[in-house]
Image 1 (cartoon, helix red, strand yellow):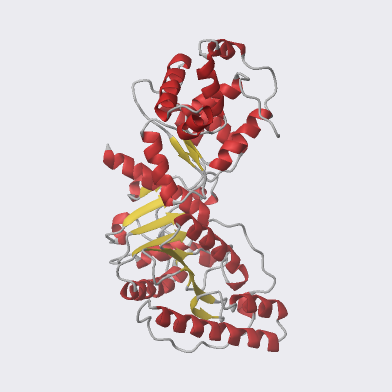
Image 2: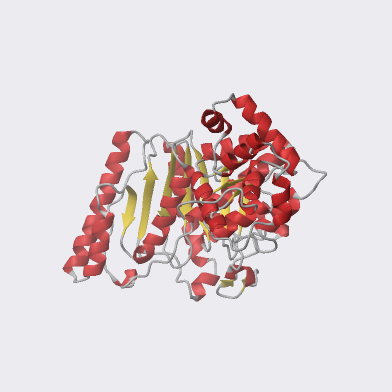
Length: 453
């Protein structure tokens, strides 16, 4: 049971982190391959992650960006020169940069010197210097989700194929990129041997990761939105790492013919579908689940009378109706994507102990949602309130306002244990599962009327 719970928690974390890494498109103006750029100077492998070693490497990367910027300005490519000046900001940290052939860049978000967890983002087709904002934006959100003692590396270490091209359905570019990714990870592992390294591979980047995987010293390889992995199954990746795969509902890659055919001069197709059961990866939902919504899954799980199960919803969907419906379905808690790992661990402990938990901004939005509900309070539910004592009714109203037991005790000038007793009696009398359902009940019956909305 403990193993299953840990597995479920990992899946929830992956869903949050991967969705945090997805970004909206950033359109370009000039094809990056059409803008000439000087060849970068060779750089020695990263000797370590001391502040001095990293500062020297970042300074070298900035020199290359400024050289590319001067070349673009000299040739009249003003838009490209302006973008490169942004990259050359002293606050940015590039381990390497090459402005030629669409551009290659390896940027660090966070502090490699202290990072205990390092996520390497490997982008898919269509990402180049003009659309680098997509990769950087996703990496920034991922770093925010991972929290302290972590670093994210945006690895644009290869010339990605155009999104709509024959190259995007052949493994040729990935085969050339895989040795570069392997070399980078090996360099990273040598410089920071104690850190846990994970590859996050999006779209065509999954093919790069699949081909680079054999023997690679990483803890996990996470593929999402993948048209394939360049291999027939997870076993063919020959890696000791845990292999994960996920896909959002409606992702067009689900409709691709997942195959690989060797023709005389080219291999067409990117291999088996990583999300298929036969591939052998561990599956997680990278967003809304295609077969069953999270709300319906919550309703089925929480509605099983024979199972004492608590449901904590961890989601990226900042939608009022989603919050409301999830809580009505029986969720005992609700956290949004900005929750840290510490917040998530705390929430699991709270919910497992039989309490309930809502993110602070969710509580406010929940109140707003109920304030917009039309119609009179539901009479059958309102009749059940009469079973409560005056003090229990008062405690129920404070629960609906999002107060904890300690805060209620302070408000009513009573012992916290007394409040716990009142809460237990309220749940029994109203036949409710937990405090979250109690809050929903209070608003649905009209016991609490929101103000300020």
